[in-house]
Length: 259
Image 1 (cartoon, rainbow, N blue to C red):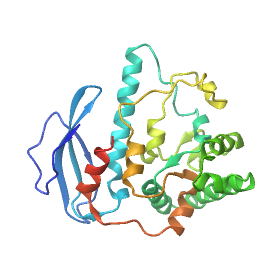
Image 2 (cartoon, rainbow, N blue to C red; image 1 turned 90 degrees about the vertical axis):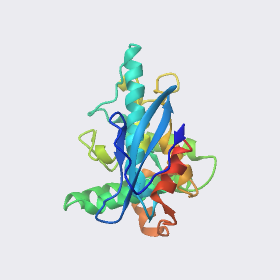
Image 3 (cartoon, one colour; image 1 turned 90 degrees about the horizontal axis):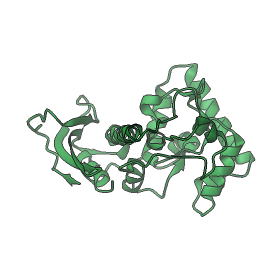
């Protein structure tokens, strides 16, 4: 992979480049630049636009969401070419009862999304978050899910067995599909959908992506580790404000360098 520096003066448009952007020009200057990622041995050109000044990681998140979706689309196309079909679709919400790992930046973004929801939907979503946290706490899992330690994986399996749906799951479909977490975008299976209700290593065939934006963002976020999605609102209310000591181009270069 190679990156070209981002500049506040937009480069000449690259007709064949994939364009991804984050930031609002009404809130501050934007920087646009070109980058090339080698994906599956193939160079792919990008034109990327991010806030030019100091921002938080969540302010650049739309870029990484676009990359995660692209990696997933390429993996699905490769699987289809080999005769395998992705079984994930609306109406099959089994994986939406898993413990979804997110970076702190994603927790902030999801909390902001919840605040933007109109009532009474916002109250309903907040109630679902609270119910999920209560269920994990009553099962003795919450401290294991949010603290350091080697029990997180096992605690995640125990949480799945509780059958608690993601607070954003409605009618067995994601109600925030366009804003869903990176790990949700990256999770695709070709095994029968029914296998996801009682997952085993032998029964789940997960697609391998050419990159891992969720892990790259987690490492670039300079926090202690991932959070369970159900902790997003609590984290946003209790954690210190996000650091804004790096520019958009610096954050972007950091994450791209970790893919």
